[in-house]
Image 1 (cartoon, rainbow, N blue to C red):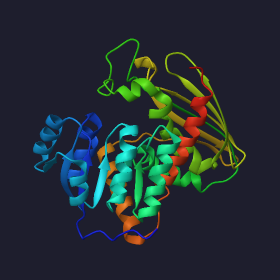
Image 2: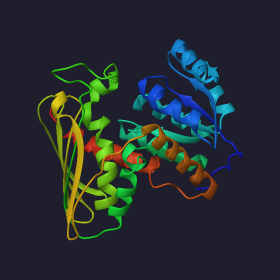
Image 3: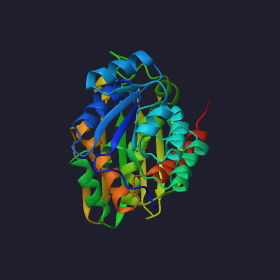
Length: 302
């Protein structure tokens, strides 16, 4: 990767104005010590103006104008809106801080990864468990072990609970359409793959609500399962991941401070730009996640 070197304080533009942008992206960008939060673009001009005003930054009516003014573009958009804009941002020479999934189609996810390579820019995908502490450090520690036998993961969200108040993300059309497989599946895979190796086979089955259960085989020979949902009852919601192997049983620790994790994702992106070494959590990795999830989705009944 031969990425353009950023200025001493790179300018970061944000695309998106939804709850994720307001709660995580914008606060983290405003607090980041090594960059300047430069502006906001959104599909809803009034929301973009409100978010920009809250942080004293420029509101953009045109994403290409933001690309021209900024060194880094942070994305807080639905995946299939994100992907074509990411291709345009890469062509403009911007470094990409992407959200997961980068797209829900293999073609578009691959287009983003190819644009990153073609235009020599850096990319990082914000996968929460790979940046939030102590979870991120735990993943790195487990990736250094060998002799894994099996693993089980569950991410059961109550975004659309059958028995309570929907979450702040319940107004997201793409989450309603694609469910837990696509929204939280990337999180589970982002831990299982670096520890157990790439997925060599996947089988998917439906459960109640939007539940999808994945059975996976990995390059290491280990087997794993992942149960994913956004429609869990509130009392059943939770996240967990357990690894079992020759060295024992290891459980994913809790994590906090998601805006801080987003700041570390930006740090990782700027490190990739400075060193010219691609981050392992880049657009290429995101494209691989999309390939696995698309293969799983194709096995599910319509």
